[in-house]
Amino acid sequence: MDFRQFLLLLQARRRLFWAVFGSIMAVVISITAVLPKTYLGEVQVIVDSKASDPITGLVMPQLLQSANLATQIDIISSHNVAAKVVDTLHLASVPDLQEQFREDTDGEGSIRDWLADKLLNHLEVKPSRQSNMITIRFFSSNPELASRGANTFADEYVQTSMELAADPARRQSSWFDSQMRVLRSNVQTAQRHLSEFQKQEDIVGTDDHLDVETARLAELTTQLVGAQTANYDAQTRLKQMTQALARDQLDELPDILGNPLLQSMKVDLTRAQANLANTAQRFDRNHPQYISAAAQVASLQNKLVAEVSTARGSINQAAQIAERRATELQRAVDAQKSRILGLKHRHDTLDVLKHDVDASQRAYEMAEQRASEVRLQGRLDQSNIAVLNAALTPLKAARPKWWLNLLVGFVLGSTLGLGSVLVAELRDKRVRSRDDLSRYADLVVLTELPHIKAGGWTARLRLRGRNQPLLEAKPA
Image (cartoon, rainbow, N blue to C red):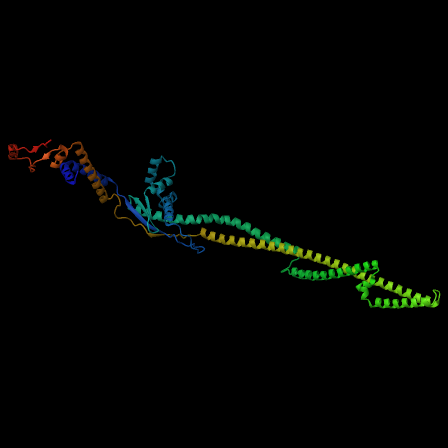
């Protein structure tokens, strides 16, 4: 069906179209006239998503705008905010509402919750697409109630936002109070342990004994090394002396070679022995000179043996003294090491106790600072939400919207009218042009009579007098 055929169809069935269209428009106008008037109160609020912490001054992390606005919309549309609006407007004490509540619920439940649900049915919250503004709309049949409802919802929303921020802080404040008592007790306990340890170990102020004892240990260690060296030398000399005596090789000993008295006595003994040999050649053993020379040799030998024994005793005594000194110094070094280890252990224990005191003090100070911030947050009466435009009492009703309803009725009536025409045509098809004959009857149109309005008898007579054929079948 082309556009020309559609116009012919619409012209032929125009009565049906106008009947359907008029009926729909009449229904729309009747419903619009019957609907009660509804007034709209509208409030715009701004939500600051880049607010800083009023206590610490730190910039809070920016939330996603869509998520933040969705959260705020959920808060505005919450039952809690609606219940607060009921309390603020004192709706529960209105007799008409009380009567309606009893009729709807038979007196069961809370009228406050029932009214809150009713208010939410009249509430509409819309966020802005490109800003942080939220529009709060409240519909009511009373223009004053519409503006008051919108403004009250905005006020209670701001108040609820502050409570949501302050209530956790108040709960944390009580928890911090209990923790502060525990931390304060920990600080006192750590300080008491430190004081008791200082008193027990007799530590007053800065204890620098460790440096003195360390220096003393170094000095004793140096002395011990010297004493051990001397002891080793003395033991070596004593060992050499013993081995030389066993082999009768005293002349090879350094101590003997270096002793001038022994060397002198050996020289004298050698002379005496030479004198004895000469005397033995000249005289008999019983001769007085021989006896005198032999006595002199024996005396010198006894003196030499006595002097060697004295030298050996001196070396032995020196070795014993060196060994005893090395042993005493070793004990002194060991005792000094033990004393230094004790001092280090005392210092380590003191450092641990001081660290415990410092750690407890820092934990207490940090908790006290945070507790102060939490207490301030619990008393905070500021919000990052501001009312941009408050609702005014509307002068005109927002609903029903006549022009919108008439436009809807026009579109609906036109659609249904055209649909009715098309349905009627499908049920009863008719020929309205030569194109219809060619399409549906498979005939060739030879000529077409002009349209003559029926109604006159002369026109009917003219039509009857024409005997010329109008249609001719197509050749096979």
